[in-house]
Length: 122
Image (tube, rainbow, N blue to C red; front, side):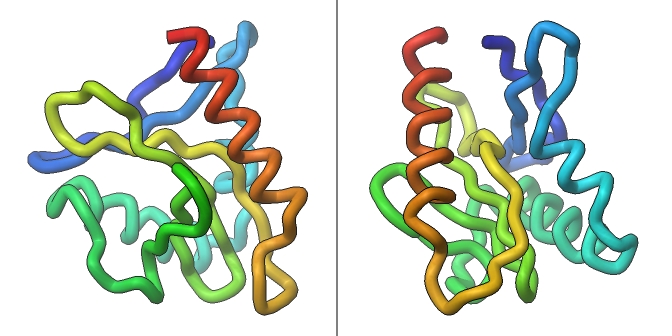
C-alpha cells in the first residue's frame, strides 16, 4: 500500500494512501468539498506542516486510539501519525461530514482498520 506525500512543510508532513490506480479516497473527498470548505481544510494542513502540530482542539483533536481528526465546522478528516518519521507525519485516512455531536463508531472503526492494514504493509 503506497503512501504518498500530499503536503510538506518545515515541521510536518501530510500523507495519503494511494491504491494501485494511484487514487485516494480522502483526496477524492477533499476535491468534492465546496471550495470554501476545501480552503479551510487545506489551511489546517498547511498550519500543521508549518508547526508540526495544531494545539487548538477545535481544529485538531485526538479521537480514539491512534485516530486524530482535522476539524473544520462539519468536515472531519480522520488521520493517524506515521511512526518512525523524521518530522511529525500524519496519514489522512477518511473524510466525512459530521452530522451528530460524536463521530460514528463505523467511521472510527473504518479509520482504525485502514490504519492497521497500512501499518502492516509498510
